[in-house]
Length: 151
Image (cartoon, rainbow, N blue to C red; front, top):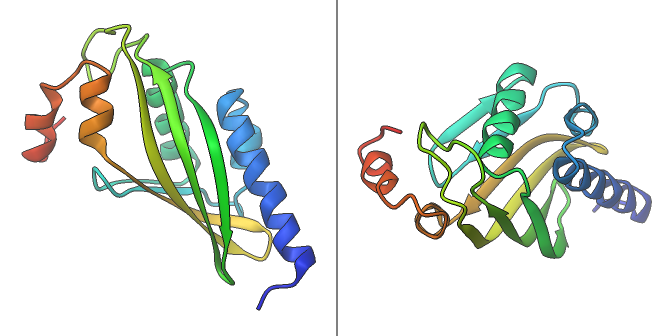
């Protein structure tokens, strides 16, 4: 069982992580990891491993959705991880998988599981309904590509 102090430090690091994603201070976001950032996007099977790939993920998602943000954040603490539920919101104002912006907004529920080494994140594993996000953002044609492993 983790101590109350470690639980609080993990809570603070996740808040910094999520806040700096919104403000696009990605160097600070990377600093919340244990030195080797990793994202696993379960809906698409994408894995972004290491500084370069994770920064590419940030650039791609924030080009497409520069106003991406979180609402209704809820935390659930376990010994080795923290599960965070939230609504992810954004507007497609930039290119998304080589498609022009639609100006349409999305709102989808997310579950992100943050794994830790002490008080530093080792991995963020994200679960969400990709079809809802893509459809709401006005890119339903991408569903066929994702189903076939393309995009």
